[in-house]
Length: 252
Image 1: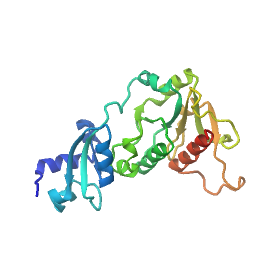
Image 2: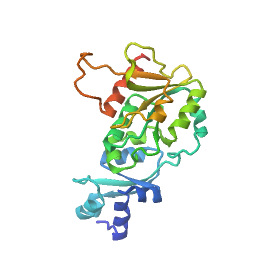
Image 3: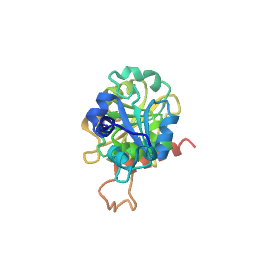
Image 4: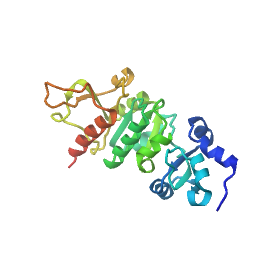
């Protein structure tokens, strides 16, 4: 059986904290499927640890899961995940396409689910406000079910990105209680050469004032029946799925 040093255990375990993920440029993935996805991706796999090689006790010490999986990998973050100058995204946006803007999503499960939605519906890229939860948080990584390796994502200054997109002739959509019914109004799906971006607001605060000011098209997801909404609002990930699904339906 292969051994793993106490220093190595400490190093891997430290990656459960954002501070050390930022310092090292590394993050952890757990599970056979996730490790397989990591190894197929362009990202460098730094190390792989298997329970049958290092033992149950060591695996429990480096895992963030209540029931550790048989395999865990340490992976290098993509180098372009943090964007300081939005102009570096000009070439991407000039091709048109449909994008998501995450306006301070804080719940790891929501972010992971949104990335799975983006993967399913072929979103061209996901842009996140810089105070959105860290995509390399272990809970986010696990909840993506591998989508983290297939969806392009950048942390950016969303208002600046929005200004650039509007200057390019793009459209920016957001859902509001006073918006227009999403099912009965025209939607620019981004296939005509101009970019379209859907803003997803914070779980408790909704879309921020700064981003609401950039929205060119205010949408509304109606409840059923229309005069009896029941719940006060939709979960951020659920609202994302409904909105993106309608945009993609218009392309068929």
